[in-house]
Amino acid sequence: MFAVIMAGGSGKRFWPFSRSLLPKQFLKITGNDTMLEQTLTRLDGLISPEDRVLVINEEHYSILENDERLRPSLILTEPLGKNTAPCIGLAAIHLYLRSPCTPVAVLPADHYIPDTENFKKTLLCAMPLAKEGYIVTIGIIPTRPETGYGYIWRGEKIDKGPLYRVKRFVEKPDLNKAIQYLENGEYFWNGGIFIFTPAVILEEISIHLPDLYNKLENLKSAISTDKYRALLEELYKSIESVSIDYGIMEKTKRPVAVMPAQFIWSDVGSWESLFELNSPGADSHGNILEGKGLLLDTKKSYICNKTDKFSVVLGMENILVVNTDDVLLVTELSKSQRVQEIIEILKERDLKKYL
Figure (cartoon, rainbow, N blue to C red):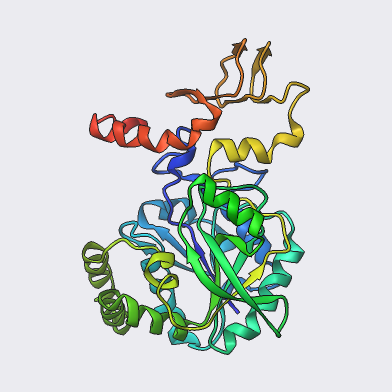
């Protein structure tokens, strides 16, 4: 089995801790290791380093170039971020030349999955079906009516293991729909984890994203030549930005299976989700304080102080405070997803030094 680790994201939702040159996957957000390091560790004993492909944005290459642990792995750089379909396609053409029919596990680099053994077992259970030509995805069992995720609607059970056919991939719902999905019991969160062979995914790209496929084929013929870099730049400048979900999964006629995850999972997609993840360590008033500070008459709040300054919060509830050397963010915790809007405003006002 191969692994493709998608590590090209910009980490906007964790601003101001996460910045354009040091996004979420390269930060220690959920432990003593970076999220990328945790992703790599989860694969130890299952997929060897030489069978791993990391896809990153080229502006982040300097972060990894001296990491001895990554020496056996293939590191591919993207000139621009163009979402997950081009990222997966780029990795697939390289792996196709090695072994077109060997299953590939496609994994985001910034998810929190503490149950390593059950994670490995899940990937192993999915592998035989992927060898038969299926696209297999891992469905996360919902714990709340979440509106921030896409969903997978499962169909009938497949005989081979705890797998179900996929009826449909569903876009992010409104709250009423999300409540219905939770009560129905046939819907999973789409965690963005897929297993398929390079041959299968390239065939699907050829059908549903033919422009991307043709340019990937040109690039594949130039691998290991001096034309590769120029063709890569041309490809990323000209192709559309499209996710694998929208570009392939919502349109494919190929058999798709979903396997319910038997492990704890979080995409750690916002400050609020990180607060929920760390809530077992909250104080008696439901607060989490990281760094130097004092909380008085304050409830259910998250204070993340990354400076030497002493932060004091008095008489507040359900707030987020993130303090870095150059930026102070204060917001309602429930509105922490909106930090992406701040980034766009900073760009418009040419305040790029804060990005």
